[in-house]
Amino acid sequence: MSSPDWNSDLYLKFEEERTRAARDLLARIPYCETRAVFDLGCGPGNSTELLTRGFQGAEVVGVDKSDNMLAVARARVPVARFIKEDIAHWRPPASADVIFANATLHFLPDHRSAIERLVESLGPGGRLAVQMPDNTFEPSHAAMRMVAADGPWANRLVPVAKSLTVIGQAEEYYDLLAPLCRSIDIWKTVYIHPLEGPDDVVQWFAGSGLRPFLDLLSAPESADFLARYRERLAQAYPRQPNGKVLLRYPRLFFVVQK
Image (tube, rainbow, N blue to C red; front, side):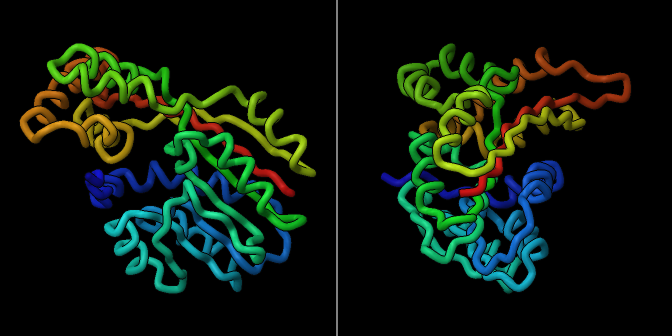
């Protein structure tokens, strides 16, 4: 049975916050003549739109396996081309000058092998730009694992929690990439997002990190899971004097040139 499709409306509720990392990643790609740009896991096209502005004159191609996301992306960025494909198996054509993977590769079962494959598939001078959320040990994600283990769904959800990708240290990715690339720019940024309260944190991750858990639950179970999750978030993210809560969001970036 296939898993439910992505929900673009839920994802785009925090479009400005999510797109900040894509802007920061794009800003660090060294300039050179670019003919073809590929946006892996393009989602609803917010990152693809940035790429069409940043690489004017190049063909920009969005790649995603979600029909919902692709429909939104095509309407949003009509100047780009979009293809439906699973990025876990996608290989760039010889024409690829830039591969842009913003918050996508960490969803793959073996993202390190995918990174190697993408770099090795680039032509000389080709660039790979990657951003991956590094929040496995943040309170938001620790709370997911605790709720998964504490509820009546534990036998279904604990294996999911154990299988989720853990992002390595920057040094690990540098060592992976160094033999394959002429240059490596690698860094980490911790974003602080002021949100209205625990409900906003729930909605943020309902469109991303919570999906592997919620996809296995019935509607009543999902409601129960989210209620328990919200209770833990209320403890983990105390309100500021103005009523906001501050969501820490670490992200790992690298831009390499073949």
